[in-house]
Length: 448
Image (tube, rainbow, N blue to C red; front, side):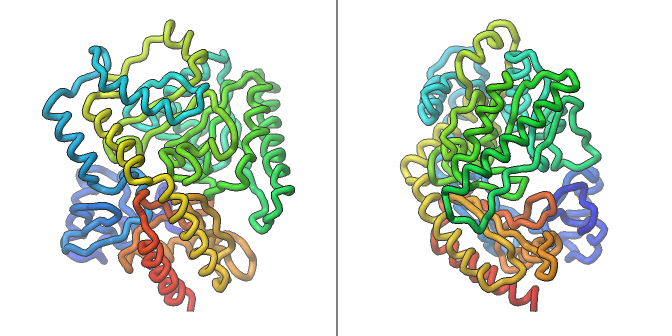
């Protein structure tokens, strides 16, 4: 794959002259005004002008099925969310230093979705900010600096979050007090639950070894942090429960467990509201973001109250826009829609159908090594049939083939070889059928 600064599925600006004139104009204008850091998706970028539900529309009115975007979690431009934003913007939009019930009503509803041990919540604007805050809390509470993360983790783009995000690439150095471990790797072929505890224990052993290495270098552990679905490590949801020995190992070492729920949270797994709940654990800190406001900038850190006690009394924290009235109204409307439209159950039912459908396609496709998923988050590994090695070029070829058939997905994993299928939560069985037909056609055309 071309060097795209470690953005999987990035458009190569060097090919801009091959685009149609209007798109070429936009691409070159972006480069002139925004510089090289801003990447477009796809070999042939999509010019999107509006969206609704699970569809995006280009400038010619062509609909694209969105099987990728988790930010508009309850669907693009959901009328209930749009109305809540407009109503609140016309009434009041201010910060959290004035007393009113809007923020408290939302905080109460949000905390009710967590285990009883999680009792406080602090607000920010982005997932990166929430991770940054969680790191500050963990380091203050434990007196440690050390962090343990997975080998291809992504947790954000602030200076502190980037230091624990190896998926950003070698040009973004990890922190000196950071250790990486190989992600959990249960045998995808085993259906025997009796074999599953070994995967969790092996992962916990790697975490324990990393903590020991920190200690050997005079660094006290602050926390272990993980995306509960290991999204950038290749989407690794199973076996449920494998994180139990990990949280025990972290607590035994005096550290905190931070669950990064920016991607798994708000019902995406279909099993529960939060990804960590599949594993039967209660984290010390939980960070959330992207889908929280259906595209509005709101994020949060939920915590055990005893962990915030000293931090809240001794450390000044204020975020001017974190928890502002308009974003809170949007977030409350997201909870309304999730409940009213049964979107957690929809993620469970449609997610099972999606997984089964993709497994059927994979059974006759030698380039597909494995399919994994839970709820509306599924990964499909592409391999070289002769060697079994990951094949990122094949995966990106399929991503672009689907784009040409008006289906939008992307890829993930350390080799960019895993299709990332992560649609808005209203995704229905008919949409799965549309995706499956386009995928089958793409596979036939790409790997003749």
